[in-house]
Length: 339
Image 1 (cartoon, one colour):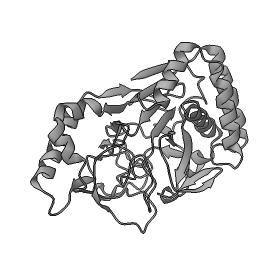
Image 2 (tube, helix red, strand yellow):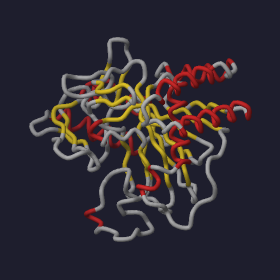
Image 3 (tube, helix red, strand yellow):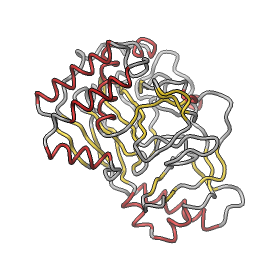
Image 4 (tube, one colour):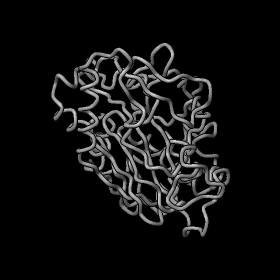
């Protein structure tokens, strides 16, 4: 884990640029991408050598988790009741937070993007809109009907962000999983943490034979409930991928992956060992508010959360691709890729 701490003057510049981008429409608006890249370039010039080293460490895919602290708080106090998802999508403070996250992605040499299978939405508002939290919402669905996604209040097991087909590069049909997941909070009244699990120590503890089994295409997954309809679950995928440079990417969900029918016993044993390793792994806990953000390396870390207690907890999420990833790009401004 690394920490990027802003000086007050740097935080003020970052906030001013985020407000300017939000007024231009935020990450989803045409023309904002180039403005964000220019602002991030100017922001980099304000960094001292230590801060640059932290940023470069993340940009080179060496850092599992980057915590960004010391930013300007955004918005006022917590409301008595949580606003609707529709109103939060157009909330100006949410757009400021999203624009700030886009700047942070650019600063770390990542490109913000959206998937077509995620309704082309670059900015995801994460909160309990579908039920399942400790405090019930209006028209709470039956427990078995609660959507297993970031739009519910259910506890989410350890997972990387989908899609799970490939890790660094596009195939003929699929763009890779995100390189980065960036999160900040609009509100977090009870200071409920986000948990991050570094993968490298888990794989090292499993040993080479088990990791080798995880590189075989003997696994399958179920697709997220919140995606657009019409796509099938995944078959014949691996969990670990190595590239020619010796780097690796990991993709997994504790509640979506299983071994394919007919997979060798080594695949079943490796999956069980992985699940046990994750269950016993160190968990980094970060409590988000509007002055803090985290960049999670989605190729080398899992994240999870407990059941949401306060339904007013609202996070703002963006995805990013680093310079090592290639995608099937459908449009560049804003960046939309085929999932």
